Image (cartoon, one colour):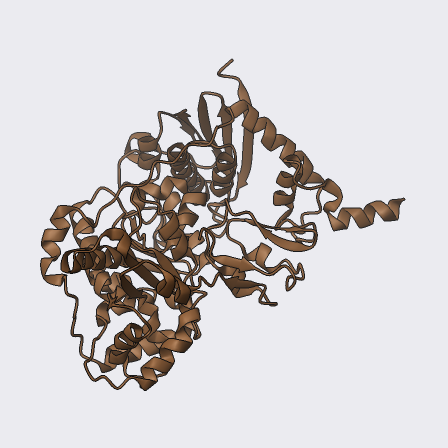
Amino acid sequence: MADRLLKRYSYNVSANDFTAAGKGSSSIKNNLKSLGIDANIIRKIAIISYEAEINIVIHSYGGKLHCDIYENKIVIISEDTGPGIKDVDMAMREGFSTASDNIRELGFGAGMGLPNIKRYSDQLEIKSDNDGTAITVTICL
Amino acid sequence: MNFSIMFDKNKCRGCTNCMKRCPTEAIRLIDGKAFIHTSKCIHCGECVKVCPYNAYTPESIEWYDKMHDSSYKYKIAIPSTTLYGQFPRGTDICKVQNSILKLGFDYVYDASWAAELSARAIRLKIDAEKTVRPYISTNCPAAVRLIKNRYPSLMDNLILIREPMEIAAMLSRERARNKYNLKDEEIGVFYISPCPAKLLAVTNPIGDYKASVDWVIPLNTIFGELYREVIREDNMTCSYPSLSGMKWAVAGGQSKNVGLNNYIAVNGMENIIEILEEIENGKLSDIDYVETLACVNGCVGGTFNVVNPFIATGNINYISNSLEDDCMNPDIDRFEKMYESGIFHYKLKEEDSLNKLNLKEAVEKNEKIKEIYDKLPGLDCGSCGAPTCLAHAEDVYNNESQFYDCVVLKVKNKQEE
């Protein structure tokens, strides 16, 4: 029973919309707070979902961010359509970035997105091809 | 003295200004009058500032009676750093401490002196412990309680160095004990405060210690008498605040006093909330220190001050530019010894965790609240007596208000009939 999905929160994320970037992860955070989830777990999820959301904004043509609540875990799923990640191993390295100078000037694209997601997750799965990327991050409760 | 803000029901017209301004949604309108849920209140004083009808006033402790009728054999005053910004320019600042003595105190320990000590301790901790970034300041009790209430995951970022008020109280108490051979209960420590939240910091500190301050005197309740004394004072023995410590009164002054380069100083509730959101998202971890002060311009913006925060800022800058800094802190030379003894550090008080719902129940509860919320107009007008439609939905779920308290729906319902 513990792995039954209790609730899914979903948010649309637009490409290149840096003003709205962070709204989805902010909502996720507030929903988890209202559920009374432990503060340290919320912090991990806040970082993971924020980085995932920013990745959609920077690198894709748009996508969705989901937060699935189970009794024993929380799963953040980011799905986008776009060019995909060319080299996942490289993308996992701290400081490696394919973001353009324009984006870096906005303070994004420091090459810490995926490394940070990995750092705070208990399980990370990345599926990426020419049509887009799906990232599934599990945080155990 | 557990609550610092007094509320006059007769003056309240139920205008909703305070309710909508409250950063923790602690205020509701009940029978057309504001009501503060004390468990949620962080004593920031926003309601006092925004109320157009002056329905909120600082609780005036009868400090005069407290001092004169009490069993205290020795009375210590700790004037907040903002006090110096309240006097008109040109006032002889060196007379202020003597004038406080004239009001019936036996000793003055300036908060600015203690600020020097806290600043050094903060610096040492930031330099020694690099694993936590950014550290968040802890001297503003309203900001700290905002974090506790809305950003509990950031509690680990709090620097947990005792604030100047507490340091001043500890050291002046110790001095009185040793010098006059007094017992703790024979010594009364009075803090002259610009801010209602300091009362909370005294009665219910976040740390696992008993506060050394006994009474908090709202600055505006003592200022008139004090100013008269300052004008009258002809004693030429001067006593000055520490000028760099005094800057703690103004946003950014603390960080400068600590001698930091890589810091952010943020003031005003909305601004703090934005920065805390950033930190919670994992940003700003390359910053050493975030100074968070709940009031606009810092402590000079506190509710109990007498002059406008910008004027007070100007006054404080004027004083520090026109005087030589001559730190009269009696304890500065023994700072290192004190730091090693650990008196600056404290741990957070253990809190009883609320009996938690299990996740399944919590999800169901949220779904029901959302069901109610979806039927509401989403105007966040406040007419129902809750600050937002979502807050109203929660109140309805908790049986604390009625669904048709919503004025918009009530009118619609009538029209349809």
